Length: 86
Image (cartoon, rainbow, N blue to C red; front, side):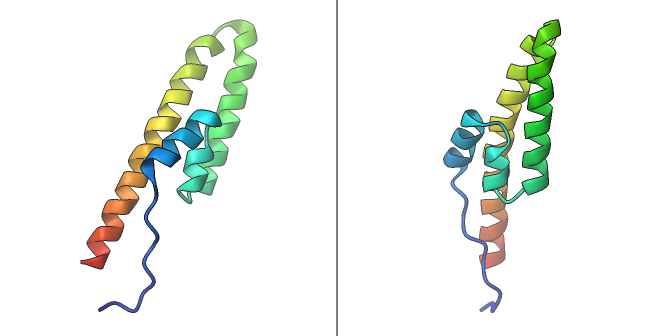
């Protein structure tokens, strides 16, 4: 038996939904604060780039990447947590 406190499991679906609502929010939910803030800053820059039309390409790419990344990171964290428990 381990005396270390285990990390609570993350809900991967919730992480993806949070990133869908606000890019970077899913990463923050996963505990990746710096990464989440970086995603938010990049998405803000992408919104500004819409004035020169490149943002219409980069904004949705980053938005989808944020959702997928948040989901995968939550799943990976859960797998690591299960491995530590066993």
